[in-house]
Amino acid sequence: MASSRMRVLLLFGGRSAEHDVSRVSAVSIAKALDPDRYEVIPVGITTDGEWLLAGKALATLASGDGQFPGEFEAAGTPVSLVANGTEPSLRFDDGRAHLRIDVAFPILHGPFGEDGTIQGLLEVAGLPYVGAGVLASALTMDKIAMKRALAACGLPQVAYREFRDGGDRDAFCERVKAELGLPCFVKPANMGSSVGVSKAHDKAQLAAAIEFALEYDEWVLVEEFVEAREIEISIIGDDPAVASIAGELISAAEFYRYEDKYCDGQTVTKIPAELSESELEQVRELAIAAFHACRGEALARVDFFYEVTGPCRGWLVNELNSMPGFTPFSLYPKLWEASGLSYPELVDRLVGLAVERHRRRNLRSGTQRPDRPR
Image 1 (tube, rainbow, N blue to C red):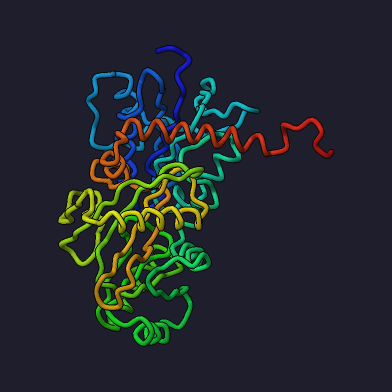
Image 2: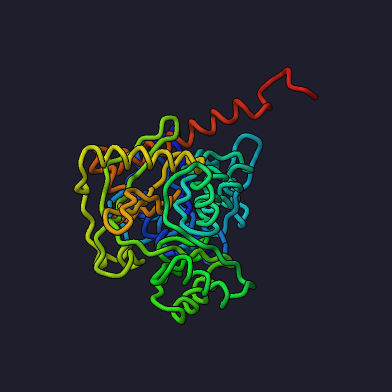
């Protein structure tokens, strides 16, 4: 292929409990990137944090036969990311010449990938990357910090309480029972894909759910239970941010589980959601407001509850995901496809947004000005 192709570092795997989800997402991304425009360099990050040039994935891409596996393996040749002046590159442990990289697509979910850590590394390396920046990534990964930001901007959401490991669990359980009521939902503050999430119906289950959530993070979020419709909106861009049509989740389980998201479980996805024009306009505006409240950039999926019984509070922001799943079952790309933006067009636009943001930020870094203070 022509050397003018943009070289995309496709980072997948990672150290979080969502390692396997990322490996599936990576295949979809690689298939969608036009080989006439992009040269994909697949690098898998193991659960131990080692970076490996994924040999089998690379061979699949090189073959050009379109026969992709269900997921890429995080196995291959050890590599590391280095910044050579203005040319970030991959360094091989075996001494081969560095491989220059143009842009990164970190299709990593959860801690050590979606939480600002990998974004900070890419910023230091001077490498454009797809997705939210450091601040928005960290803020939306931590559900407690995210809820504080939403509250500061006056956006509606369910009532919640927060707990840190080391606190008085029995007293906290009594407080939750009195202030939020039971049942309630218990979640690790820093995790995604419903990993570590439980629904507690009594005090004993609440204590067990907190113990379970603490396996994933030292901070735990407890939310009130609401009888409501679950509505999703996808966002792309940031100036301006554009909202997709709405989708609705109808789960046969008590909540939208990991299996439903990625293993074709019992949840039914209705796209578009059955909403009036007024309701759709309201939720799209609220999605963009929530996106900006968390300093969102490039993309996000915003999840809502629509409460029309009981307290009848209407739209309630549930959470934002700065790097939602990109698997065949994932709502983020499915909502855009239903909105008129195909998967390949979506991926192409996200890469373009990454390059443009990097260029824009470099102009404001101060290093380009000959008259800057010494």
